[in-house]
Length: 112
Image 1 (spheres, rainbow, N blue to C red):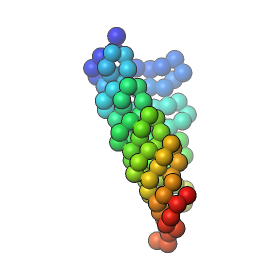
Image 2 (tube, rainbow, N blue to C red):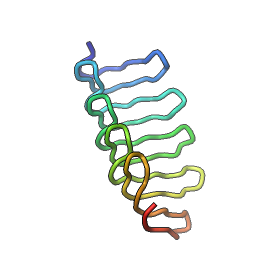
Image 3 (cartoon, one colour):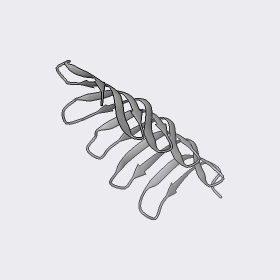
Image 4 (cartoon, rainbow, N blue to C red):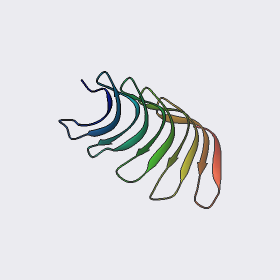
């Protein structure tokens, strides 16, 4: 039974290191998803929940709130290849309101 701090490698190659409660990811932890990116942040009952940072394989990143494995609440998504940013309110993994900021400083603000 995993309880407390530990590291576990899943059969599919994903690697989690962090807090466990009764065999469930719970607390602060980092998971490296094989070929899908890395999440570091809060876990509740085995799900990304709270504050966290997800870095995608192409180096795009999302930093902000999570709820039940989805981007939810305030957060920022940065496109690494262009430097564009999306900052605002997220719901069920999608931005619904905020700013799309271009590298030159111009931006669109409103609902998405």
